[in-house]
Image 1 (cartoon, rainbow, N blue to C red):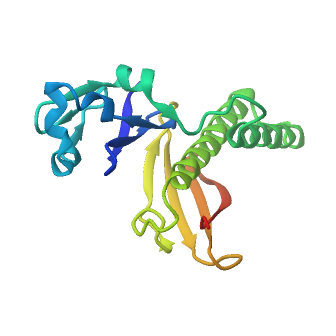
Image 2: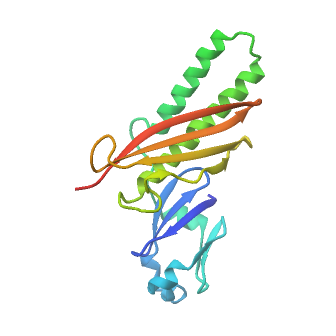
Image 3: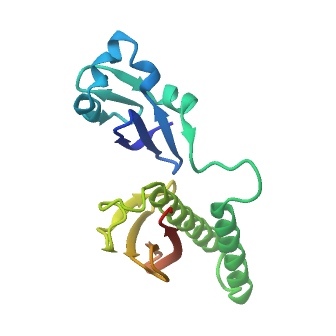
Length: 205
């Protein structure tokens, strides 16, 4: 596993986002009894962390490998039964591309494969971004602030760059509910393609 982003929490847990879109929580508290990690009992020291991709390291010198984190984290976007939102969206994207292929028989098989791959990747990026936002608390004034956020560029496995634009509307469609709109855009053979999805996050009572 390669770590994309890491967010230290005041309860001595780490929110980890992997490069493949997986999200999980890693509890550092059990390690604080060891001398190498004892300095992290101080919250200020715990927050001073850097991401090395395949490892994380605190300013005090304590470190953990990505393999250790993956083996012991609690994955948040993993389901053991049924279909995940990602699976449904990818299936819909593949189905839509199949229908387009029947309607436009002049498209070559190479072109169809490229379009199918980028559309599937676009859907995957949109779902991963949405699931990452749903992890945050409803009152998070940074990640769930109302308005259009700064676009983020994510490079897919195919090398295509996807631009993710997030727009959040408070009290929509009702009070104490946030409407989260994700739009993913990319260039496909000179044409701009987009994949959009909307989800909602309600304030816990």
